[in-house]
Length: 82
Image 1 (tube, one colour):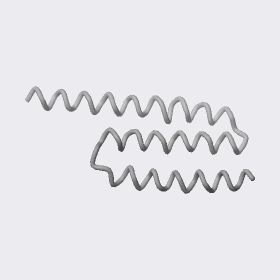
Image 2 (cartoon, rainbow, N blue to C red; image 1 turned 120 degrees about the vertical axis):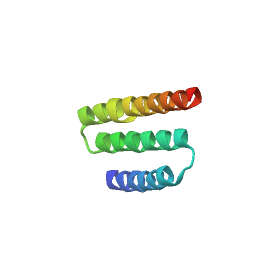
Image 3 (tube, rainbow, N blue to C red; image 1 turned 60 degrees about the vertical axis):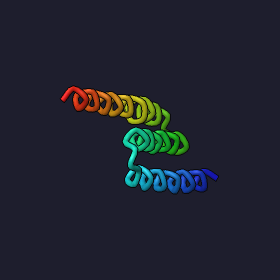
Image 4 (cartoon, one colour; image 1 turned 135 degrees about the horizontal axis):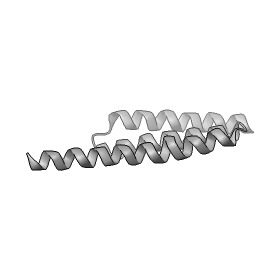
């Protein structure tokens, strides 16, 4: 049963990766990359590694997404000032 969950989550991750690559909207691409990381943390949890799953969810998914969105917002503000 767990191998089926891992395969399904892996396929969803591949789909989200292709969506991330082909999106024109940068905010949506950043959120899609965060979804990939969140799905990776679920896979770690299914594989029986809750400490790695918590680290991936907090740093890989949440913190990285917030930093990317902050940097994008900062760049957009600098371009408006020019």
